[in-house]
View 1 (cartoon, helix red, strand yellow):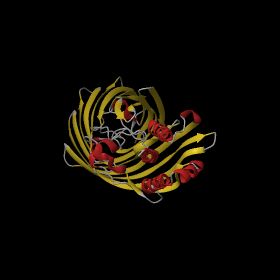
View 2 (tube, rainbow, N blue to C red):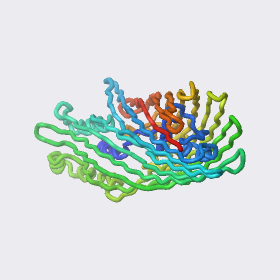
View 3 (cartoon, helix red, strand yellow):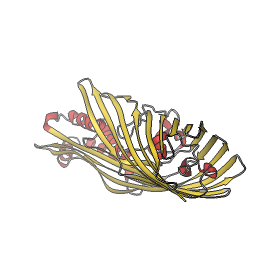
Length: 442
């Protein structure tokens, strides 16, 4: 049983998750206006090309463009707590500068728009010392073979990347003086990899005790229809949007997959216990099957419902509230993990912005995210934490055609405490993002 658990733990590395915002598989922060205000579901400006396509019916007549850049930093830490004490495993998750491009054209009752960005996941995570489930299970297995802990060293590292690139197009029609509607389609391209190793080395007699080397690339496509509606009456705007589930099925390109006992240890077992060696080989064959070259895995993006209300309290002061529901329980994940969630993701957002004068605007906002997590969903290699996010920033109207947006937001996560066979594990995360963007219209 210990050997079986050991192999399962090693192979679980292939489910490593990475940084993303919004739902479990979906980003919502593309435009800097979101980062500095959050509630943008009733927007009629250029960011509405994503957040409220129907709202563009009330926007700028003519062309608009927007180029946005964000830089996120995140830490994903695991603290393993045992009766003997605790050990912290630090995971640094990051992404390079993340761009997003928006464009729209409105003439009369019609508007056409597009958005290109990283629409899901979007980052890289690395644990330079591995994670506790690997290290402790290796120690337990070697202990049952009477190999002393001080006679070997564990070398463990894991890392993974997930990006879902998206390109969206929308057609908007103003129905009457108060109502508008939009239909759209987003193409999504998944690009990810999982790489790592776990080695237990003994300098005397046995040499390499255990070995895992994993290098798997995954890629796949998916498409999502999008519909949105908008009601506009004086200072009041009400927006609603529904994104259908995106079915994404990736296919493995397996560069390396090697898991088992070291050569000398295999030889020793061949002489002393060949039945145990055969059991290990059988287990390896069973549990490496899904990581072989060409095997397909599901990484669906869930359907998303958005409802938002925006109100202009005065020519200078505007505010909005918004609700998101990501139907994660009906979006297939690797190993059908979605079934372990208690419910889909609920988000509540609110934000305000104030024009200091014709040149400068300041804003702030907040967001509460509840994922519906459970102990069975959470893993060392893929975990999430409920959170609160706060953001602030401003805009500078450089001239009548050009606006510069800047922002900062951070996410405050609630630690998740999960029971483990050796005690407990505490999952924690931190997240910071700065952004700058330029809007241009003519």
